[in-house]
Amino acid sequence: MQGKNTLCCIPEPEYWQASISGIHISTMAEETLSSAVTRIMIDNWLQTSPGDAAKPEAIYNDILGHLSIKMRLTLFTVTSDNPKKWHMKAIRHSGFTSRILNINKIFADCYVEDFKDQKYMEDAVIPRLRQVMESQQPSMELVKTRLFGVNLGYDRILIP
Image 1 (cartoon, rainbow, N blue to C red):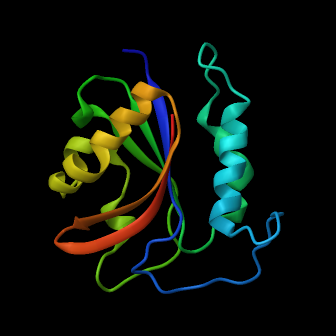
Image 2 (image 1 turned 60 degrees about the horizontal axis):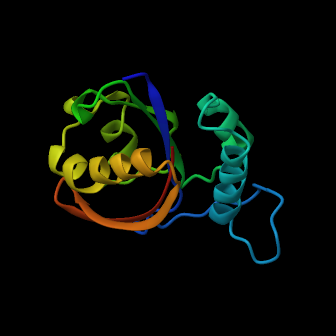
């Protein structure tokens, strides 16, 4: 299997209560920052073609400077049919820390097989990544799951 990349942007986890000011991104009336980030990434993705897939940077470079403190961007590189061999790389960590979960440490660059909470990967990540890769269609959804026993809710954008 040739290497493929899937972007995962996690804009606004519900359990994080933080805000940031001073970030400006051109948005339509009443468009939230997460909606604007999603729109830009989807627009960039639409400019690509399946036969000549763009480098992931072409999809996300325009939004890197606009991600809020509550947002993180992760790139999954798929080089095998075995999801445990997929590689997860943080393109941009969240700037927010929590006493409950150190998200940046938990989601450090690693192969899926090395991720410390395999149930989370098996329940909340792998099935949806497979579906996005098979359909070659982006997915935007609210995820409600558990990570290390802590209830977690976040918006997730997956782009093949």
